[in-house]
Image 1 (cartoon, rainbow, N blue to C red):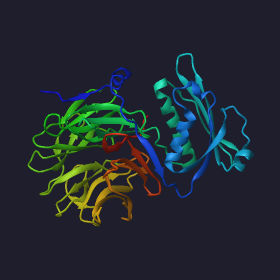
Image 2: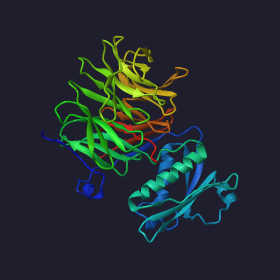
Image 3: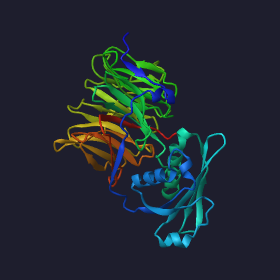
Image 4: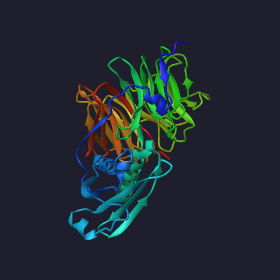
Length: 420
């Protein structure tokens, strides 16, 4: 077998041998309806760390659109006296302070405190100890803590994203990066297409489709060791893998019986079982948050629409009725919202539907391949046209971010789960 795609372990040694790829750059538009003003001080001695903590925290909070970030303009450690009156007079409802200590073992202790200036009280404190490679992660986790303490919703800044790029030399790369696009690493690359990356629920593996065997075959790759296995290489096409919430099974699309239908398969490739049974094309399966239902795209009614059925298979019911072309269903982590792509007015747009009421909201035009953030507050999608790349929109449509690269074509985004 001629091997045309190479998998890489996530080790510094291997990654050091790779050429330098363009990092993602974030552009932000729009804000939430009621922004929370937060002052973020420069952390004491943060220059000793390989990443500037306060700058990363400010960027995360600003990117969310939820916060109005106030630069404190001074250095404040977690032991500094807090003049609550002064910060209230500057319009800050909360204050973030901290420091960085370089321990003798080479690791960094990041000490942080969050204060409520309105109630004149401490809201939270953390002091993670991390190695040099995890310095940015420590800052993201502090931003997550600020987000959760001030909004009541878990932050998703410390999560990762996966996506596929096609470089100018026609090389396809499966890349993994922090949710802000930094810290990119190449998981796999080759001359044949790679599509449909899908994170396992524990964030340690990614399933994807590779054409390296001159046909679409589904792989699962361990992102820690780099090891991978073929999960489905049936006759015909093997595509569109999606994990069950417990990580034990995958829903996939196979054409082994003549036309594309939805199947279930264990994560080790065993236990293959057909789930849908129609005369149309059934594809793009996605599990609901409770794992009891599978949403999928089918043209059984004459055009592509979104349907749902039991995760054990059987009869399906139609979910989308507005518009003649609805594809790419995705479910929010709380199971309340469906995102999908609809072709209306001659273009492809990202929509979200409240599943309880059926109310639809048009979130973005020129969109494809949506993926929810693990806290369900944002949706990442690929943009079409000359400005192709990745973008993020809040589920209420108020906040939009655009992630761009200096070169290459970026597509197939998939937002990873919360990391333990």
